[in-house]
Image 1: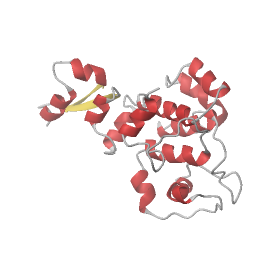
Image 2: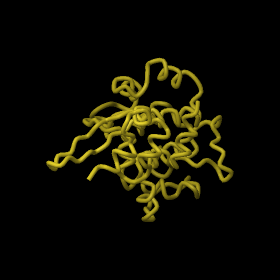
Image 3: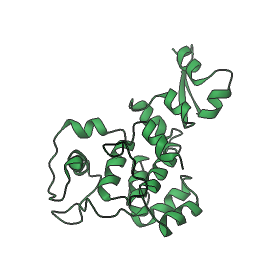
Image 4: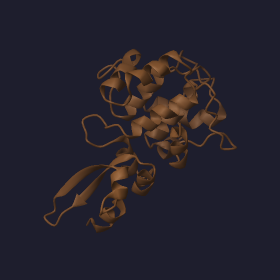
Length: 220
């Protein structure tokens, strides 16, 4: 699957110090929270303040994510003093993060142990994909595959996708989204000061008479 490399080109994942995405490595809770914050477009906010945390098992590279995750109540530890940084993350746990990135609330819109069912319900994945994640290996490869699928999934109560959310925060550009064939929306302002949001799959932007770039240029 090319999904991880799309995330890398978008700047959402970086890999190790050699740029290796380590796709065959089993994902950990620390890695899952780090990618979740990235998919939220909140890396800068997380690094801006040295948030405190009560955990004693936090590796240096994870320090900024751990504090921010606790501050935003995105996650909790496995005990009062342990986050479980090196513990294996399950498909249900990572899908819970992913649904939160799409503005769904755990305990209100879904329960963490049924997060895969919720993902199927909203069209993020198929039953076959969910079963494969649950019954097979759940590595960094699969974690990034879920993240990629989320980019083309609508945010709760909206016609906008997670890609739109990242574009709005300035984390990726419409040109990047177009190049990676992601689905996103365009705001087109008309002469009567009305704004129409047009949701286009990126491949259409490449083949339509007016491309995404042209539409952006002509919008006032």
